[in-house]
Length: 156
Ligand SMILES: [Zn+2]
Image (cartoon, rainbow, N blue to C red; front, side, top):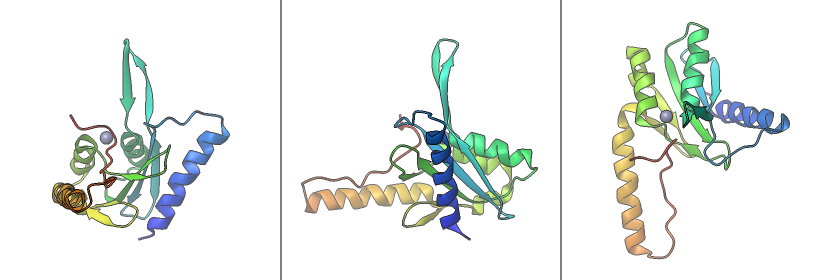
């Protein structure tokens, strides 16, 4: 699996938006899905007013749609990037469940982060472990703690 290629694809997608003079906002995300076949599908988030309400479509959803357009539904790995600071993020539970319900095999896919990959079925454990670690870290070192888990939108 070429994770580097996924980061590169995400980067190109952001570059394209910058070149077309689009404004990249802190909430904007780019998603790259690597299908079982090795094909990469990308998507970007969209926000706009819909019936008087600010509506955000997650980047994962567009990536899924692009994948479906090519009649693919088996996912190998998912990369979600914040287009503003280029940090890897965890997809939200809704987007994860969209990916899972697309194909039974997708329970074996991975979420790609900068330094690690997380099995999709191990996300809850990974989040809990990260919280425990950062609590441990802040207990040992009370100054500045930025081991924060990023989500495609804040958890309620
Ligand atoms: Zn999402």
